[in-house]
Length: 385
Image 1 (cartoon, rainbow, N blue to C red):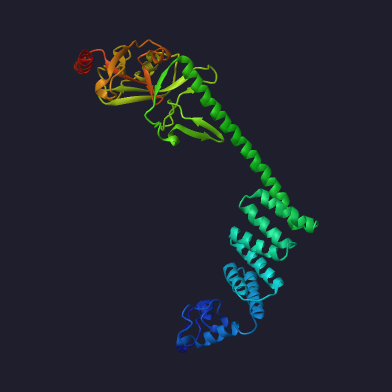
Image 2: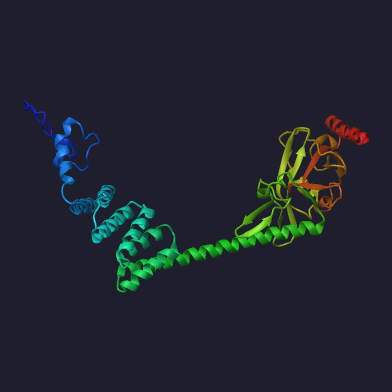
């Protein structure tokens, strides 16, 4: 607003604020879009009179008035208000089926704009019970069903609509969109089915590869009493959970080129309570092959100037549980592994058991105070057994 100078005229209390004209008009009964909640108060005598006029006359006439008010709101894109008026019209008790059909159909249109798709379907269904040849009801129901990706039902509505009115372009165009979308969905479903099938077959191949090598497995994740932990689905394929499958997602796999099994492997350094993890260790490689790469540079926990953890200055071990022993850490014994042995040969050792699909090995320097104490602990354990 431009600045004005000089003495200003005093505005009366009843004057509307030109800067907020729409809001102030909304307080005037004649221009109100919605009735206030406290219409029973003495201050709202005019509103009570207006409301009583709304409900004057036969029920059918009242319903017709609500329909017209709903139509005005719809044209103004006030779809929520339109829905309320159509509902108020339907709340009246009258016999005119044609008017009821129009109210259901119009409320469906308002709900369609608000994306209340299930309400659209309900109102279209109610209109079709009155007139099963209402093409608009079939069209709007089809749009709602399409939005909910209920393609078969949407196609059925369109086809019924075209049986009644074969030249209806809106229905025909919608049917074309639905059929195109259905083809795309089916194409995506086919891609998904093929992917699930491939995943299922890959896991079966790993099952067979492990079994053919005679590798022993144990799982800490699978509880035989819990069916949800023993079975699961890959798409539509039901699968018995294998003992090499774990919750971490680090799983053995088959190399597509060589056909070799590749395992996720842990190397533990108990002296420093540290570890290294290798995601894919080819079964035809030796421990030396891998540790030579891992220890090419001294690990952070080692002595940088005089490293002890070098591939030529370490020994590798695994633990195993003797038959008949109670499963706990105090029962495990230590087995030394020749570092030049292939992983496959180690895993097929009768004493080796792969836990949760991840082989693990202990790495120690060939000499040193910690090494001696560590090995002595296992020597005493072996003697006590």
